[in-house]
Length: 120
Image 1: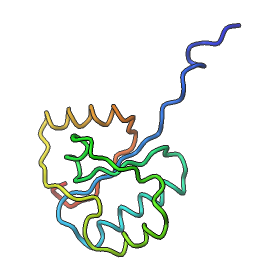
Image 2: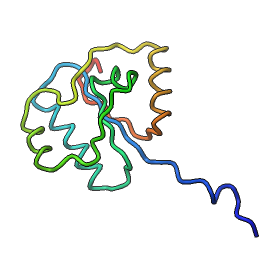
Image 3: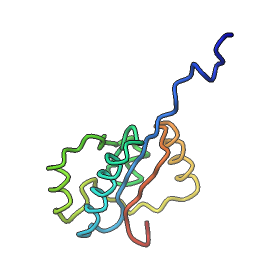
Image 4: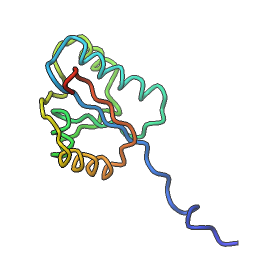
């Protein structure tokens, strides 16, 4: 019996993206490292992207692969106050969000983590 088309298609990747927004605080990098460590620990995320300067970085394609951040570097990032990925204070409107969702779809993003304050 011939294989169905469902059997020949590769599985969709489980990609995730993380960004930072708002004012840098002592906890913003610790949260970033927490997501990186959890992604490694659970192993179901294929690629973890970091968005440079929050949602603006997603729109501009300014992404870094955080999948293999060494533990020593992660510890230094967690101990450093600021926003390692860079922050933004962009206020997305409906069109901005449509474009953003299109970019997430292009990268097969299934999980979106966004670290920031009330205005994020």
